Image 1 (cartoon, rainbow, N blue to C red):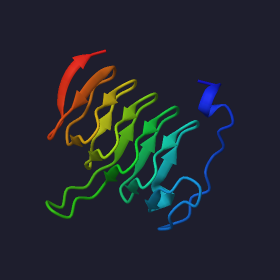
Image 2: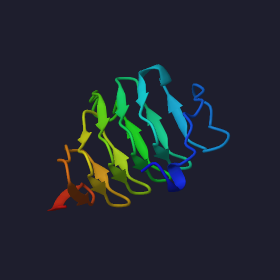
Image 3: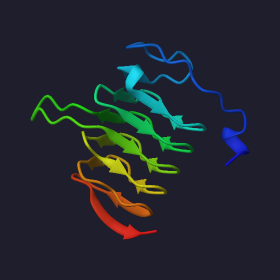
Length: 133
């Protein structure tokens, strides 16, 4: 994926708790975010990285997604890992402690509260493993 929309990719400058002025995403605890090359984070996506978020290279995260390493409802805490080439559909929520596998696809509007294996399609509320890709 060195051409196309990632051809001129540059690491975005992330400011704490400030809406990114070009891409319109918001990060809290930016020092705990490990952002891989050629990632695409959609507009109005929120990432709370308090307990660590690793986003590997070539990941696409749709607009209006929420990624939480701390849930205040049940006080669950945990690092989130989104592996290489994974895609997360618009308006999806990823909960603490979840790993989204390499090449996995999460359908739009999904509530991801379980680990998604490599090369899997998953979607739903709560998310369900649909099929191996």
